[in-house]
Image (cartoon, rainbow, N blue to C red; front, side, top):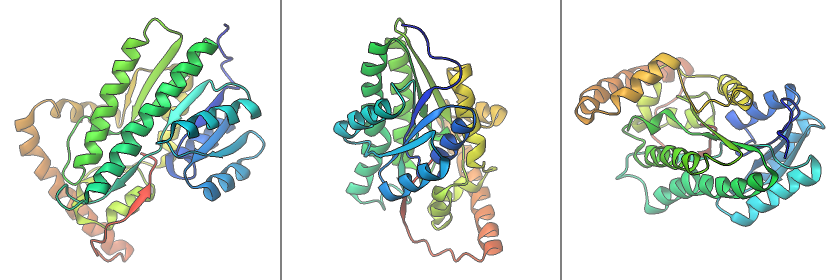
Length: 287
């Protein structure tokens, strides 16, 4: 079958009610693509799609449920045609150290960030292979390279997602599909607000945070360029990836970085008038 045109692709984006997912949808539409926005928050994703115009439509999707995935792909086909690009962006975190999280909170993170993405990738492989083309873009995290305090289970899902992604890409190397994985750093979404409220997540503030639009640009660019892997920022990201290879080095460096993040979080909290209450909350994310 022929490859899809360079413009005008049909794109399915998860976690698109806000954050990076919403930014990806908006930019993709601006560049001439048609987008099915999906999210577990039905009201929010419908409103977001309505605001983006006729090239956007929305569908409720709980990434943990295979039947939801099938319905989402069918909804995209009914409105725009077969999905050319799947952007797996949905995920959550519960802030707190590993000992502080309840068993169900650990399970939530694994089921949504890892198993939900696996379910979507497998659904996409079946459909895209049958149609003769397709591109799977997984939005992962820089925590896939570097374990961080306060992100034990979240980081574990991202390590696992990266391994799964590259394993599948190798398995499917003789097929018609392309695979890209993108690793955002700290991003200014609701997740960062959540992390601000919890001192255990202070390391998120050790380095510069990025606007969701910057991550969206990399994702939408990848629809054409089809890179194998994208890290943020390009130079510092490579350094972080290298540090993650050496456990002893990690144990020396990361506490220093965490202390820097704690100082910056306290500065930002004071500047914004935010009380460091330490309350732990959960939200959908775009990282």
